[in-house]
Length: 324
Image 1 (cartoon, rainbow, N blue to C red):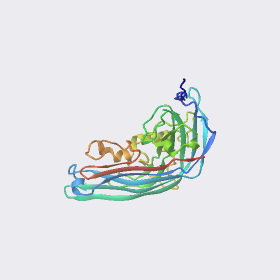
Image 2 (cartoon, rainbow, N blue to C red; image 1 turned 30 degrees about the vertical axis):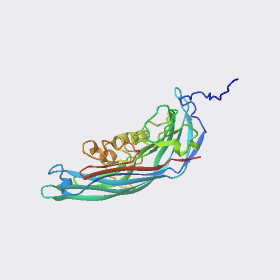
Image 3 (cartoon, rainbow, N blue to C red; image 1 turned 180 degrees about the vertical axis):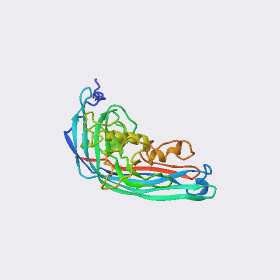
Image 4 (cartoon, helix red, strand yellow; image 1 turned 120 degrees about the horizontal axis):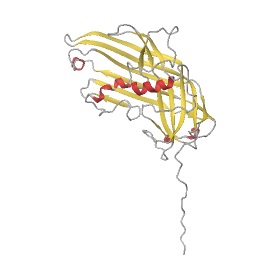
């Protein structure tokens, strides 16, 4: 008597990017999202003066950036040169970006218990031609992610990279020696997905990554979108240092005359953004337990100082591209 068994004899998956060349191109549509960051103080004398009689000049802010692509883009396949293997996909287009919110500055005298200066100004601007890139590169390392684990250890890293754009031509407030202009620094938003045809990725096969941007360019020099030619490298570097869609001081300008072009911002220190909003979390007792703006949960985090004097929030809602 013999016993027959059914055996699974599939070979172990090859953990490289050899099989990353699918269709020659795809149409990517419906790219949109909204990002919010906030840093706020409780405006009472015990909170303002908790650090001493002279708290200095304080800046608080709350703003939201909404973005939506203007038209579908062709996501084109490129072959990686030696010694790389496989392919990557690249597209570029333009976004409409709208920022709304407020910047509030004040100086307070803790001896007389009076505001020396208090100023609140709106942040309201829509830009209709903000360049963006959409890039898919194959990864053989397992980067940190919130949701999706490909199991095989090989995946797509999909990056949406939105350029910087001007938002306020003249801003002068408490303690400023002269007016400045303000530019929004753009953002890099990334997913890890299953390594398969880009048009057949299901929702459960992708996960949004934390806010620290990872290298994500096609190996061909096709990622440049306007001068300076390394603009999106600068967007990623600024995000790593200052947070996504952070605000930067530039020379005062007038819209329609001499405003800075999109993608023209250099590497710099932000005057407002997630890094600044959460900068106190490591030193002040709070409900974040040491987490920073870049930690999971992906892009969504809220902190409150135990004294109730300081709050910071960050959140992102973004649609993965429709791909066909």
